[in-house]
Length: 268
Image (cartoon, rainbow, N blue to C red; front, side, top):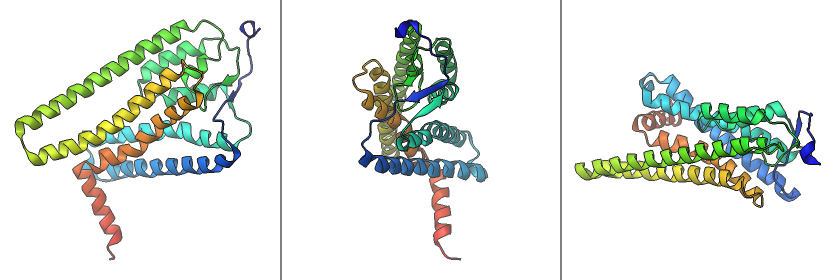
């Protein structure tokens, strides 16, 4: 029956997390704390870079772009997720869901997402339940009973391409850094390179595995909560750690932060 039925309503129900009443408020306040923390740290980095003329350099503009991406991605996801944790009914319009799915994927390639979302919205809908705690592209095309082979093939092809190129570029970068450290044999340089690379590698592996789990677990519907948790981690962990890893370990930025903090603490 479901295959012959087309849903015309624009109101979708979001499945969300299956949470016991005792865990509702602890989870809500945990997400609220995480959200305020990433807002404070990323907005702080943006304000500092914009206000300090000495930091108006290409590298710091890259930090600005990273912070803006983190802010957009998490603002699209977390406030609505927190509202749905407290709500007894979780609804969203189809258009809002498409916008959320696109913006939540801005961590990848925007041009890729325009094409993938375009392949999804062309499909008719026979279901009205988002089988997730948020809207993403895979959850959107699961609303359809049509053949979604093109979406799956394109999505898997781009995922393999993205992961392969990402891992290859990271491996090449670390090999080059290791080679320079070995040639220079400078202890101070080696220590700073090891400190920066180790923290960056931990962050990269968290992003890699949480993103990989999200994509793979869409093909295994028996683990819905694990997939939802992996996607949330993919957003919130890098957004909280990026200002620390890239900000505090960059000498000029760290110097400006400590300078401002000393100015605040030292009485006039």
